[in-house]
Length: 582
Image (cartoon, rainbow, N blue to C red):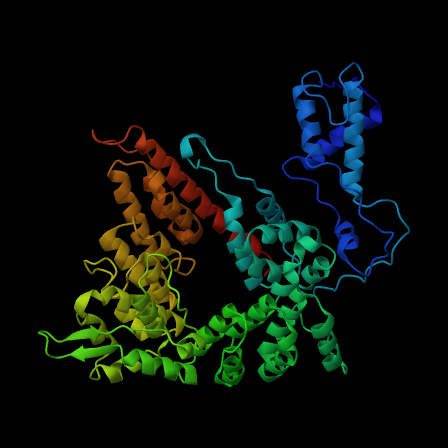
């Protein structure tokens, strides 16, 4: 193994510098290096360095750790000179990784990054951001999470607070921030708002960050000015796909008519996958004026495009497609008063004709699913919910959902109504299908699964959501609550937070291990109000274990609650840091 006295001094320094530079994370290639590899405006002789074999750096590190007598360095030979050759190779690889480019004629410098007019972060908050971006949490043995907070999981909330207070991202933190957003799509909206106008500037220089061109709010907007229309047209005709999607979204916000006209002008020549993405961007701000364009898309040659157009039209309750689907669905559902008590009768369709397929229905069912039930579910899902009171004797949504359904069709019918309520954002039907959180069915008469319940909750306002989930947990415990908790706003309302803590305390007293509740505990660390930390101090002690308790469970629970309390107090400190000087 190389020692401090082996090899040239410059090689030793390079090795030491390389190890310190890569401790905890790989050395990032400069954005300009990536730009030259992908930007068509770069001169052809500004080529990226030829990459050595995959994993060269890792093999060098392995040789250094094991010793050159046990692991021959890449490209080297065994013998007295192996150690020096290893250090020389490490020095060369370090320079290559830092440079990223072959020596070449200087290219034109990129235009300067735009200024960010927002105020800078307070110093303490900037240091905290660096910690959050560089944290690499480890796990304790045996599946335990340990007692230290997971800083990376606190980053989304930190970004939300920083954005709410209008701070600009430190320029030196932007590469790490974009790398984090690249790896976690849930971070992207808040990270790109925080990164500001420089995110798009950097994204043009590094293909790894191209997602920012599409996702940055207003990122595709043509620069304002007297020739804005001409620039918009040029960006639409010549821009990268991500830039065109961003441009369409930006125009959609301020000029829906212009956005539709722009899309229609090139629709016939776009690739099928691009048409699908462009059509999907119409979900935001969907309005009745979109109907003619979407009706034309129903005849598209791509099945996925047709299905998306039909889904969007069915979300417009007064569209012609919605009326057609309502007429079809109404023939399948009726109120049979000959039964005692009266019940809903279902007669599923016997075929899926060409008109139904044109309106977005898929004729071929998934494996294991009957054709008629598959067609029936699609019809009811796409029909406006206003169809049913008129069809079923003027009953309210709650009364309709409470009716029995004959011949075993209840689950299919209620599941389709649930999907329709989510698609149409109908809170009245969502409440009826959810039922009371304390009902013995653990979710009401209409919800057929936890996933459906979670989606139905998404149609309610934040306060009502929290109240319903708190009642559900108080009645049914935490075993089925994880998906439902994920739909609640942050920080959790006080009744919801206390319901979660009480349920965790009950689970601890039952003597089981805390690991089956690690998901809920992780949510609590991010979502509980930090003001609840003092209320949890009494849970930090190791409780007396009953005779039938799992060995050591009390200690593990104390560790889990210690982590929760520490995280809540850290969140309070982070909020104070972001409030400094405001």
